[in-house]
Structure formats: C-alpha cells, structure tokens
Length: 170
Image (tube, rainbow, N blue to C red; front, side):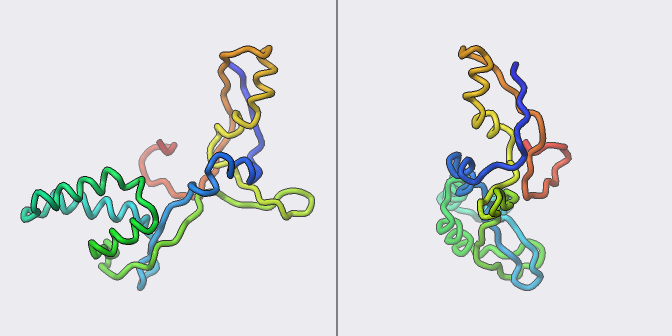
C-alpha cells in the first residue's frame, strides 16, 4: 500500500473539478426571532417523519406523498426544498417562529493562497482528494502498474458541528 501525505490546503480549481465548490453546502434557515439556524432538509425530514408516525388522520395519498418526499429529499433543488417548507408550513421546531428564506452554508473553510493572495483555496474537506491529484505520481512510484492501493494520512477540515456520539462523521 502506498502512503501519501498531501497538503491541507487545496486550490479551488481542484475542488471545482470534483464538484465540491458547487455541491459541498447545506441549505440553512434561521428562526426569524431568535436567529437559531437549522438545516432545511433536516426540518423537512423531521416534519414528514413526525406526520407519518403521529397523525392518525393522514390519508393514504398524503402518507405516500410524505414517504416520497423523504426518499427524494437529497435530490431536491433549493427551489423545491423552499416550496416544500412553504407548502407544509414548517416553522422553527422549538419556538414555532417563522423561518427565514434558504441560504447556502459552505462546509469548506476558504482561504487565499499564492504570492498575490488572490487565488482562492480551501482546507481540504476530505482526505481522498489528495490521492486523486497525485495519482500520476503514485502510479509512477508503483512502477507504472495497476492495481495499487493508496492511503491518505492526515486530517480533513469541515465547517460543521457533529453531534453524534462518534469521533468521525460516517
């Protein structure tokens, strides 16, 4: 197994190519009175699950709709998510206050790199990216032969809070 320890800062061009710059965000909403932030997809999922579990008057069609929303939740566009929150009248879970409009929350720590400081870069959000960037060198080091195994050593940096009782997000 080949071991690679890559820099912690990754140029933006690498993360644009992998889709991280465009997709590595959570859509958030705020309680308009308290300012408490929530992930919009979590609020919608929790709402649907609670309705399915506790609303005994739910019609079979409405139950099927809520199950479908849970299944496609990760594929909803920002506009579709916004519409579902509005359609179901979802409010802040603790206070029942109205929620702000959706806003993107970037999960990567951005920085400026290069001698001019004008090139954007990010603290690497996951360790695998370094292996892909250095594939050509790893391939050469392995005698230009496939297959080979590579392991990235080091940390990943994400702009998120993890509340589950594990040391690593899974």
